[in-house]
Length: 388
Ligand SMILES: [Mn+2]
Image (tube, rainbow, N blue to C red; front, side):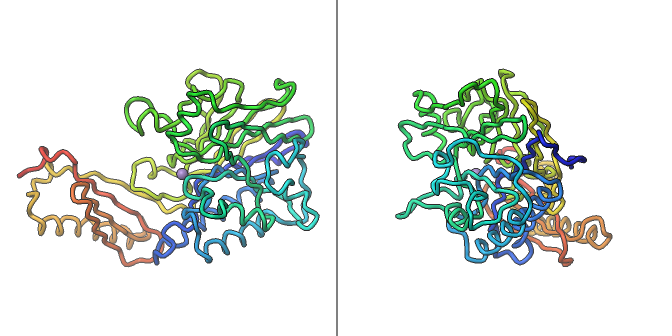
């Protein structure tokens, strides 16, 4: 955590993304995980005296969050963003350009905001339906968030920055809520995405926040046209905050052309059984001061660890068809995790065996209801490696 409090010229932003609240909410063991981690993240903002919170989309896991999920989220936002503390920065751009209600929530005379929450939507919580609203609009009308980065006209996407100033620091934030990857890729190629910069752009620190697939090179990830490449983003940017990708790569990485830095905070709950989700999750505290920034990653300890192990069938000597032997083998892995739980190494065991060929899921749950580790055993897709 940033050890000292921000001074009069330092804008401190708590950056988080992909909190997916409501994920697995009906699960008896994991049901509260996503919400607990959102709360932990908000606590980081509060204890480090962040000036504002910036969320990179997929705050909610479901497009129509359950009543319980919405209620709890609103309750947390009340608890961690409202209060009598002073907002020490100013929005100096026209709020009507960025926000549908024409104002930032801390300027609303009916609200008492001390740490404003800004967000873009992700692919899980995007606007739609008859009303063309999303869950963020509900938070917005309740005065609990500042929802921006929504672009209606995909033939002409004009990204106008939200301009913030604190003391001698000036920051322009360019928000781009999720758009279907292929469409956005095409729009970038067809030069239908334009960025408006403030007059005197050199005096501003330029931050972009987006929620899209990130190009991972030719080896891995989604097809090249179904993602956004760093090279497509304008070179005047100083920092890009990349939402949607769940791997936590919170340490700033220099962009391929070295023009800006990229921070990918990752999700605060593991929603898929992939190796990228198994790392320790973090949020970022970003201090911006007169054109330079510092990123302090803060680990989230409430995130239930995901442990992955691969078992190669050909190394086990078990027959592919011998399901009994497999049940025995997986059962013994489950019980060894359970004994680790009893020994206090892990608090509980929860084993998922995924068969990538039949897509079958078998789950074994340990008996200690505290934390658990999840073990994913992936059978190699290449059946030639099976002993048959
Ligand atoms: Mn997403």
